[in-house]
Length: 127
Image (cartoon, helix red, strand yellow):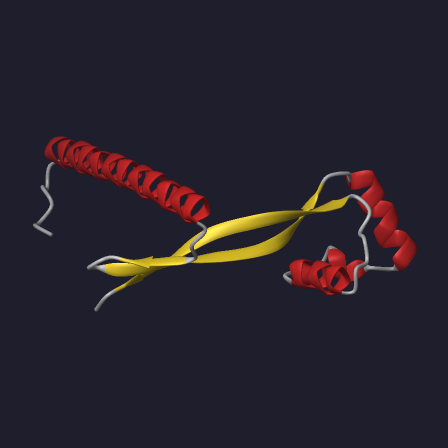
């Protein structure tokens, strides 16, 4: 970083210029992220269509990650379930998803909560 101007006018102008540069870069990052998401959605749709769980390119590989995650659909019913069963683990901290998974494994239904089948891809770059 070069020395800052001593006078306020040029210093303010430098600030405006720096802000413009930052905003341009933020916009470029936003557009790059949108492109990544579009490509990821396409890969995910292709995986589903071809019924595959992984693929490789020259620069990396992608694998499919699937899991059921809880999604509250009826807050009132969910609240009543928690109170009735003293199931405080369903609402506190990171244990929420694990608590739901544990109940689902023993075929226990949780009032007000549906299973949402989440599908994501994991990208690994070739080094």
